[in-house]
Amino acid sequence: MAIPMSGDKAAIRNWTRAQSRLGRQAARPVMIFGLLSSLAGVGQAWCIASLLGHALMGLDDTAQTVTSFPLWPIGGFAVLALTRAACMMASDTAAAKAGIAARGRLRQHALNAILVGGPALLRRVQSGALATTAVDRIEALDGFFARWLPASVLWIAAPLCILIAVCSVSPQAALILGLCGLTVPFCQALFGIGAAVASRNQFLAMTRLQARFLDRVKGIATIVLAGRTEDETQRLASAAEELRIRTMKVLRVAFLSSASIDCAMAVALIVLAILTGKHALALTTHATPLLLEATLTHGLFVLLVVPEFFAPLRSLALAYQDKAHAQGTATAMLDLPTAPEKAEVEAARTVSASGVMITLDTVSFTWDPARGPALENVSFAVPAGETLILAGSSGSGKSTIIELLLGFITPESGKILLNGAPLETIVPDALARMISWIGQKPVLFAGTVRENILFAAPHADEESLQAAIKASAVEEFLPLLPHGLETQIGEGGFGLSGGQAQRIAIARAYLKNAPILLLDEPTAHLDPATEKSVFESLQRLAVKKTVVLATHSAAAHIFHGRRIDLQHGRVVARQGAAALT
Ligand code: ADP
Ligand code: MG
Image (cartoon, rainbow, N blue to C red; front, top):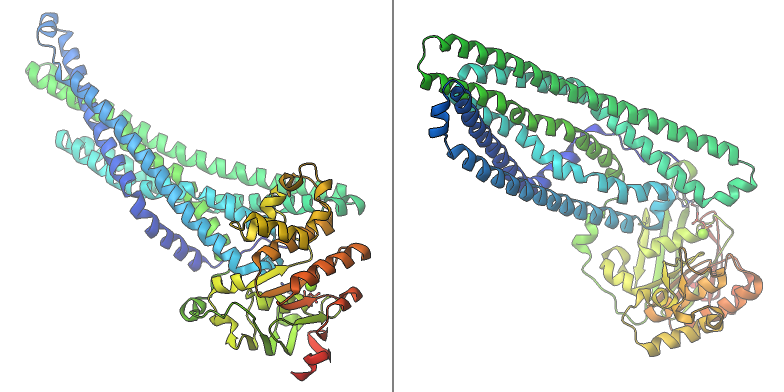
């Protein structure tokens, strides 16, 4: 599957603009301290220039140098150096804070979007790409908020202040400096446009490589057994090569744009040095020593302040890549689903927690219009405390019904009611509290068995935990684990069999004790003996709950209740009281 791309330029621009607006507030201290630091640099240049000017004059007249060597430039320089260090520290701290705040906000947004999208999102977007968006891409935005936003203001403000200072001593020098400075934005525009595109492409190539790598690692067994190792290695290698080429392009562009600043700075220095030298030479013959010293000091000041003048421009060039990254991230962020706003306005309802009746009224749903509807006019009712078995071969729409009930997707037409209340009007939190869900493959997080069971009910007491362990038959395999309840499982932990993992999921659902239980082929990967015992545990769990069990296993007959058979998204047969609706 391709990397998500909603290449809508206007949308990307709007997103970047909105982020700039949000981030500028936090970046203000960075700008203020950055400006103060530049001004302190100008002050320092003046101190050194005064000192040098005086010293150079003193070369002619040693006696004078010793007697009236001025102390204020030395003191001034020291004080300004301290001020500058403090400003820089404050600016760096503020930048880090701005970056952290912005990344926190964006991660929250991405996480919400992933939660809203639910499992349906994972069918559409590679999980590798999703992980890259939530982790790496947002991390890379640090520079946008911490460096680009302040730099985008400072590159005008700081040089302008410096120009005013230079103008007060020599308007001619200010003009030269200003003209040299003006060439920089032109060169930047020239190379910067290339940088934005190159940097975006580089980021895309990186995402592609990461997503491909994660995906292939997951499917390593399939790849080896299919004899596709060579092919896949080749493909990974070419994705890596693409990344290398794009990275070199970015570096080349960055080098060119930084070289253009160096050029402008060198030209400014040479012209100003010649000017100062000429000026001083012209004066040596007839001017008073005082005037000569002032001219020398001014000339030196102008020369010393040149690097200070170009520094903000250089920061802007360096931060330009950060802006390009932000545009790359915008593409990925815009591709995430947004929470349905309607739900927030209307979702004011909760449903009585004990005993929930589920009703589907002529519900239709289409995933992909090209492939026709996944569900067509499906209707059924499950009274509180009863069980409905959804039978049907693979692809008949069972999981789609479960996802509709979970609220991750909304029906195209028809209604889903819980105790008579439309599903979409129920507060999402309340809905989450009402439903326990067990899928084909339980999700185990890296942690102990205890932590995994307590996941949905972290504050449950020891007594309920033991009851859940017993009812879910986790206790049967606990003695086999090296540290019992405290055994580390999940990623990088002790491996559990499918049946054992499923029992942990059942224990979790026990503790949560929600009135609705949605089971999506919970025994799909289990052998018949394990399947039977898992079904028995599930049966104990199902007591007094409204259950929708999607399965095509014959062993599910131990669940008494209604049953509907699906075929290509249509109900083709009903048994039990399900025939009523
Ligand atoms: P079951 O769970 O009964 O095996 P599903 O509900 O998963 O069936 O799928 C029903 C139909 O919808 C299938 O044809 C399937 O290919 C399609 N489908 C399911 N999820 C998606 C999706 N995210 N995008 C496109 N089509 C989908
Ligand atoms: Mg399914």
